[in-house]
Length: 350
Image 1 (cartoon, rainbow, N blue to C red):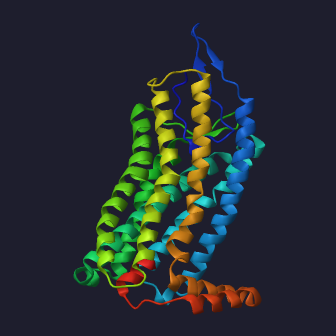
Image 2: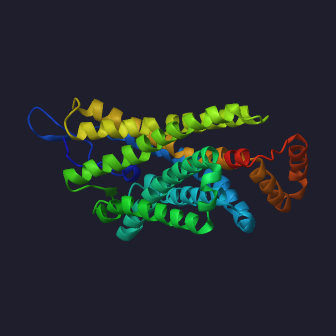
Image 3: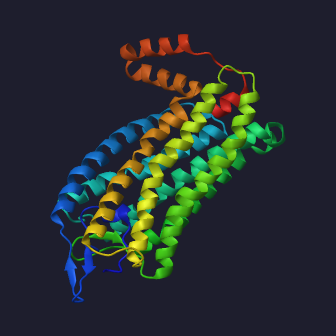
């Protein structure tokens, strides 16, 4: 079995250097590739295209609305803006991988292989980190609103946002250093030591899933009882939103991280070897990866469009772009909305 540790973000359907198993005669034999190639090309290209279009439209609208109202933004809006930028950075790499899957080789050169690999990883981690920051911010403002209000300044927010971007780039830096373009046209990330392989697994599973999930559960488990005690008509809606955030995040990301972990165990000979096992793991990674990617399409809905303040701004902007169709929607929204005056509620609901 090959000891190459591939990053499923980068290998897609074009790199089959790891599709080998160790037979009884101690010779390396390639696993069947045709079915995997056809499955990858059809499935990946279709899902990647849909994710790119829907995610670009949703996150692009978030950016446009927040830029237009930049003079009225608060810390939550600034985090939401950077969350949308993270998702856009992540999404802008997908067309290159769509082309990679269709053509069967990387045609954009070695630097773009490294740069897009790092950009892809940076967008992934920064998106997760900004969701964590928004969760902590909601927890602090609800539980300790009066104590921390003076610390939630614009300068502090910019410093925190800068720190998140630097951290995301640093975590993703190995993908820039060790991603490479092979002579056969394959662009993939190959850690050249066990230390980097363990680091890659730590960064992906611990920083990308376990810590964010623990933060969400810890913070929201304290927030929900506090909201239940509040006398606001919107508390049930807010609680449902909070529960939805945790469930959606877990359902969309956990299968991918589990598959990555199984692939790591397989690369270390800790699972049964053979083409059947290897091909199944590769298929699970592809399917779970595309499911995880669709989460960036849901972020605008979860964190922006459910908020009445943001929705009202979005409707006003859309009305300027398409006056006829949107005017009815906006009027209907205004008639059905019951605006809350609670600062805590508006913080949770954006």
